[in-house]
Length: 281
Image (cartoon, rainbow, N blue to C red):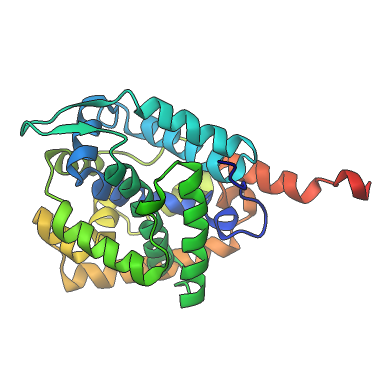
């Protein structure tokens, strides 16, 4: 099936490559690994513990290729699916798992969509209802690049909210991998390749980087997920997160493009502006 690649004018083109996305990377992995099949696969086959930022860098490269890679986006989607086709086994409770289980594969995709909504609600400008619907339509397009089954693709935001609530309530569990990921994040320093100007923004609350990672991750998780994991979150914490969110929302649009976007996204955006179509030459 041919899928139209992303390009200038799409919402993903403007948001998917921002360094700001690092703020919800940890909570995305927590949500994903709370699904039993994903948690088991990550525990057995991922390098998140030995090389957390290396794993994240590889993931971000893949995500940026889906969006900014043009014709390479669908090819990267096929490569990723082929890679995961080899991942299967039995978890610690004797349950069989496969990385390409339809529900699990879709959950990884749609949990990222939900994180985009949270990112802009907490650290930017919340989407309008029309913006949410547009972003969902684009995420369905991205789902096709990743070969997510059509039956696993919510048609609109009403269907998505029902889907997300049901997944959190009925399918997610305090999986040992999710708990372990949270512990790893608590001791992880700032990403090593952040530009210096962005690195200074990484810890605006004046705490150690690992504590900052943990704070942001816990704070941006849905309350029902925090409850499942037994995580404490106070009204004071919420006020602190809101202050931080307002600061980042204010600063991000003022950053130069080369500091706001990761390298693949920056180069693609720059190239798109300077490209002259053949029929216009």
